[in-house]
Amino acid sequence: MDLIAIVMNAALQVWYIFPVIILTFIIKTSWFKGVFGEFQVNLILKRLPQGEYHLIKNVTLPTEDGTTQIDHIVVSKFGVFIVETKNMKGWIFGSANQKLWTQKIFKYSSKFQNPIHQNYKHLKTLEAQLNINIDALFSVVVFIGDSEFKTAMPENVTYASGCLSYIRSHSVALLDQQQVLGTIKNIESGRLERGFSTNQAHKTHVREIIKQKTNEKRCTKCGSGMVLREAKKGQHLGSKFWGCSNFPKCRIVEKCN
Image (tube, rainbow, N blue to C red; front, side, top):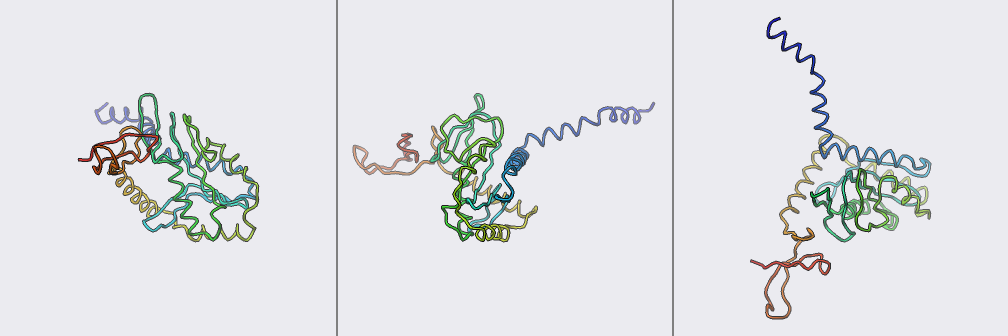
């Protein structure tokens, strides 16, 4: 048997390893985690009665400074629910007012944008587009994956199917049938066409936002933004210093060079 035949025979014996390696790599990417998380939430939201709730997924809307992408929108006579999905594991620390939340996995910690703030932009974008009262718009944040909240969370921040309980807890009709149909029509007509170019434009916009936030001065203790302040009294009267924006909960200060 010549060398080429030996190589070909060996390759045939282990061909299946390469697809497994590629698949393993894809599964570990943040892109796949995001897509899989949205898929899971989509299945959960489909359990809502279809006659009362209309589900719209993966909506990209234009904004003044670019675009914003909404994972899921649920339209009903009980209001419009804007759903943000987070597929994460580990311990989750955060409060409604913090700019950054913390994910902790054993000794590893990382910061991520407060999803309540993130979803608020979605809510305000829809408010500008839809001709309905803001009181009929509700933000919902859903965590998918093996995560555990280590700080008290608002009722609209839930695990998995907990979002169904939150949505169903709103039982007072806020929109009539004409408003519901008009809202669905406005969202569908106002969304950008789904496709590669729309996704790429949105990703570019997100990268610019992250770049701007990365360049901001951050608190070394809690990760919140640092604000330039001026001493109003004492021996340092009139001098400039950096103070944590999360004051008085966080009292970190730094000298201004």
